[in-house]
Image (cartoon, rainbow, N blue to C red; front, side):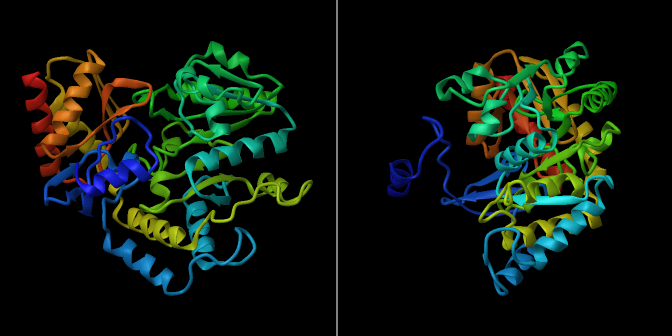
Length: 395
């Protein structure tokens, strides 16, 4: 074991017994390079973070320009900081008009926490509903509404007054009652292995929430910023949530999250009590500058318009393989479901050895995750798919 890896395992807190342990020293576009000079094709974008690829020069320049002005100044919300203001304005300009007020935080989990608090503050109700096999983050609040008991049991007791419903099940909408503060839902369930529901379901869900006075919260942490072929997945369903949660690609590779709502709703956090929600580093100016640059690039280049074509290419190239039960996709968020986790695990390890970064899904470990940067070229798609097919055919 080399010294750097030994120090990594000894001093950096681990999340699993078997971390990948690659020492990546540089990255560019859809490629990563390790300490030995080996090249890797990035097929997961840091889990839907690097939608514009790695080491984008415009994002880099925006970060450098902001660093030369200032970094952190004071706790969030007190000073007028140009990067925050400009980013919030641009975000609101590309969202439905009802979503016109942005609360910047540090991560997706913190944004979910903020959305849950805001829902309880606005409605005065206790219950939060989420879906089975949903993933909304791992801090205590989001963990309480996670859709898998396996990951929750060791940390109980969690928040009371939570309920799980079946994603896409119309009958389960009846569990949304006048006790419900919010329904938190992913328009595309990510960690369940890329599963979505009919437009009619989301319309019925929205109607039910309005009927009982509950907040509808869309978690677009994984799907935001073009991944599904629209700038935001909500555009596929013609539904505007009361609160939208964003993170991952929101920062152009830098750490940031946000929950977005109507200004009238958001103002309830400013009184009774004052500072109803507060964060020190939320909306860090460097992260906002990076995210602002990334969104400007996305709007200018419209990479999301190419997503459907690239999705079809992936499906076409990978559709005729042994050991595969199903291929599910929502744009460039894709799951290849194998007959077992054993097969999926072998494929992921073999791909890593062959220079392709892939992954599995938290609640669908038998499935291979494909979520490359949206800028990926057709040649890179073909090269990566060829390696996948070769490995699967040899198992």
